[in-house]
Amino acid sequence: MEQPTPEDRAIAILIVEDNDTDFIVFERAYKECGATNPLIRCKTGDEAVAYVNRRGEYSDPARAPRPKLIVLDLNLPGTDGRDVLHLIKSDARLRRIPVVVLSTSHTDEDIHATYAAGANSYVAKPSDFQAFFSAVKTLMEYWVNTAELPWNGDPPSHAHAYRFDSVK
Amino acid sequence: MPPNMFGNRVIIIEDSEPDRAVIGEMLAEYCTADKISYFESGSSFENYLASVAAGNDSKPTLILVDLHLPDCSGVDLIRSIRSHPHFVAVPIVVLTGIVASETITECYEAGANSYCLKAIDMHDYRRNLKSLCYNWLHLAVSPHRDI
Image (cartoon, rainbow over all chains, first blue to last red; front, side):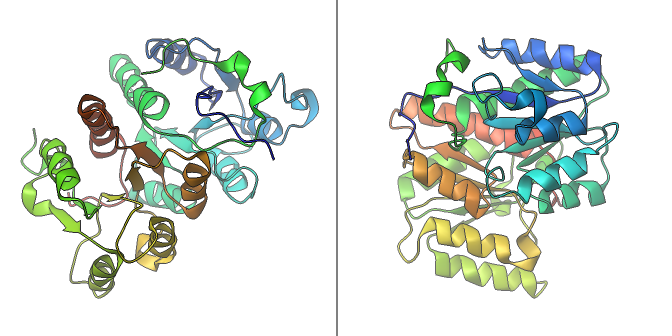
């Protein structure tokens, strides 16, 4: 099995978000953290499931790299974010990938159930534009520039195209 | 700053005194001193788990765990915390000097929520801790808060 090289901090991030405005804000905040590679976006739970399982149009690993981090909205059309989370965390090949849940739902039950289902973090999505922008910046600053992420199983050769110009 | 300091309660499983000092200093902004508990080994932490299970202690907002502990492997400890019925949802963040990719992956597989490095350079170490504290004790919603 090929091992990643130490300098391989290449990172592909998958965001599962149906709302276009939220995605635009997300992308802008993400770029402010020094990220240069495009985000991978899925608009529905079904698309996300196809993506992580490399089905259909996502079958080529070079074009659809396995993400090193997934940001997941809970309320999605079709397959719900909770189902996407459960599917990822019950799959031995995928469960190591950190999943950060971004949600407008603030109930204690939702928060507890989400962590218990294996979500790595739960961030309440603020309704205010500026607060949302700053929340995304903080979480990206942490997950991209501070935390060490697990090797996602992709051989390093697929990673070069998804490199950050400035990390740290 | 609200008087309850966001209702945070933090557990630190770490046997190195200098590390405890710098972590404690960075935590001060997010947590009152009486809400920070230090354990130097896996066995002393097991007593706390038992105390929570008996209803005599509160669940933490966050557990910070080192991988070098005198009496057990940090990875085994993460598995043991995660399999405890009262701790299935509590965020566990590894804070260690180990940079090996296999160890990082193993910790996530064992149920750690995240993994951060104790940088050798003190400036980087503090920067990492600052980002860690802000993310886990301010931004992220923990399942356990004393609010």
